[in-house]
Length: 248
Ligand SMILES: NC(=O)c1ccc[n+]([C@@H]2O[C@H](COP(=O)([O-])OP(=O)(O)OC[C@H]3O[C@@H](n4cnc5c(N)ncnc54)[C@H](OP(=O)(O)O)[C@@H]3O)[C@@H](O)[C@H]2O)c1
Image (tube, rainbow, N blue to C red; front, top):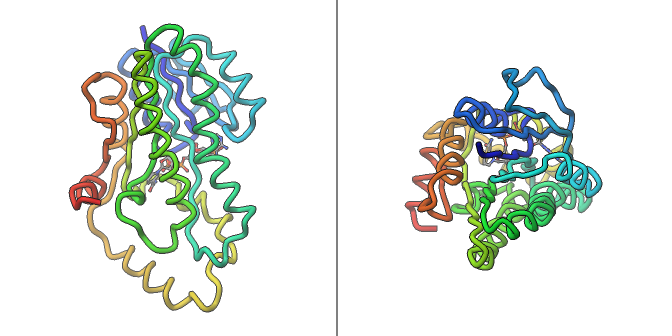
């Protein structure tokens, strides 16, 4: 029986990925900053562990407690929408600390066991904003574009050891609390000079069109975890698939 460790399981994609792998009979290490046992169905195959990916000591403890892991899903992430000029550098660092350095740090902590066993899969959840740039998302997109570049290079060096690395690129998913969770980080992020522009951007985003469902992300992560022939880059969701096809 294989074991998957997923970050950011308190809500959204991470929670749904954990539910799916549990239902498919996998052992699941569902990690959360604030562990809650009641979010997932009780199961002898489930362990809920505390993990803050921005805290090196927390990473050390979680990796030690997890034991053997076959698949790592770096899903934890935070959003930020705003004009770059109005974004404090502390906020920029906070976004990179979780989205980028958190992904790198946890990957590095689990790599030795993958290399020694000559197997293992790492799935990094990025974003379709890296496929087609959107305004007011410069910092978030940069944090995820760095994950893409990291993943693509890492895949080449880990193939040597039988370790697979994948990128899942979800589109916009209003069904998760991602935007709401980003709210407090966005205070003051639209300076007055950008107000009219931001209004037009928000209005065009509210117009509708295809979106991504958690099930699309679950499906892509499942494929990355179980299909050795899965492509390295997997757009997830109708909007992401269309953006990838547009050639960017
Ligand atoms: N929803 C979208 O539109 C969308 C689109 C493209 C990509 N994505 C990406 O998909 C991933 C999941 O997002 P989601 O939509 O499911 O949003 P979400 O419901 O807000 O989930 C984000 C998860 O990350 C966790 N997290 C945040 N900071 C963390 C840290 N330092 N250490 C550990 N966990 C941390 C959150 O936990 P807490 O409860 O502790 O805050 C939460 O469980 C993210 O990487 C996001 O960038 C989302």
